Image (tube, rainbow, N blue to C red; front, side, top):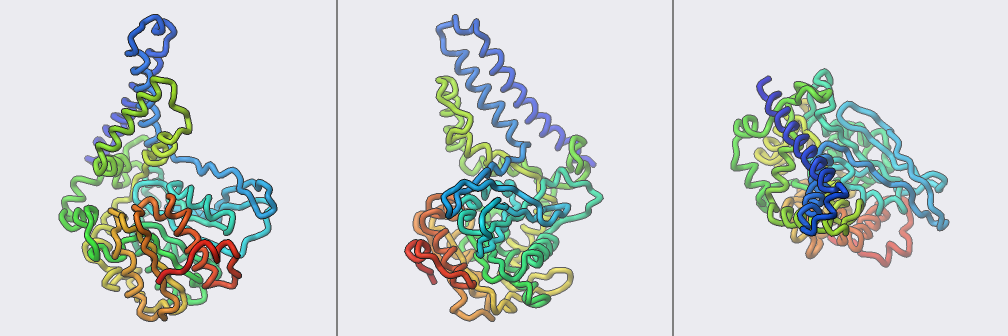
Length: 425
């Protein structure tokens, strides 16, 4: 239990910084400070405002914030988020658009479990809602899951996806974003062998590490450079007494956030300094560009230790998916068993997380799939975030994905989709 203390110390440090920010903001906002011509108090209040918000967001799960969507009738329709399948480590949720005729495209978005909440895909959901019935995997924060619920590793993750696909039925089109791409491919292959009638119609893999060694990046180099023993000793802690998952071994979200920030430390430092100046001038708003981005970016969740370690060891180090050697519950998952599910890969030319070549490797693994059911797209000038949520996604990739879905379902392509893009192969 030695890691309980370090987990609580890290949470105490976060809590203290949040308190310091709130205190500085309150003290520097007293009316009497207006009598001092020096801008010190305004800067202090700005620093306090930004600091309090920053450290508070680290332990707060963001709200989906999707209130309504405009339908073809030109009216705003309210959106309800409803749980379709509730499981200890993650739920399958649906965005139900009230009063709108049911859309024929049924899409399952597989969200990453790599530090951030599923709400990271909020803009992706928003862009698909006008044209699709959208479902998403909503993974839970490991700190809130009691130890009595057992383990959760890459095999359990894959079986969760298998169950979700079974519930949604064979008319489903699956879109996996980033980290879950290899496991979603494995889940589809598992269904192909065990329950072929439950397979989805199509599978779109966006920026995922199917073969991490195809094009090495800083992320893959780190995975190969460190040993599993080093990871266990330096990255893992036990959840402290404050949360329901007390005693569970996790890769803490705060440690993950520190890793994220260190990759672009200068950029983040400038962003926070600029926001303090804006707050001091009274130019910062609750939902300005800075807060919209960092409210999501700073909200991190703990990952179960077994999921983190098995991902590094089996996906990155041993490359079990890339070598078609992945095993689930003692059963070899042969990706070559996929023979009817259309597969498309999407990569960003400037992606420094899952570089071009890593994701498209999936097509070579699908040896039983005819070429007519394979497609790929490489987006020029797009980084990792842009291929599923940025301008490249909205303007170029989304139309291609919808066109790919229509080409592999009974849905007749709309004129808008015909003109929006073309299939890439």
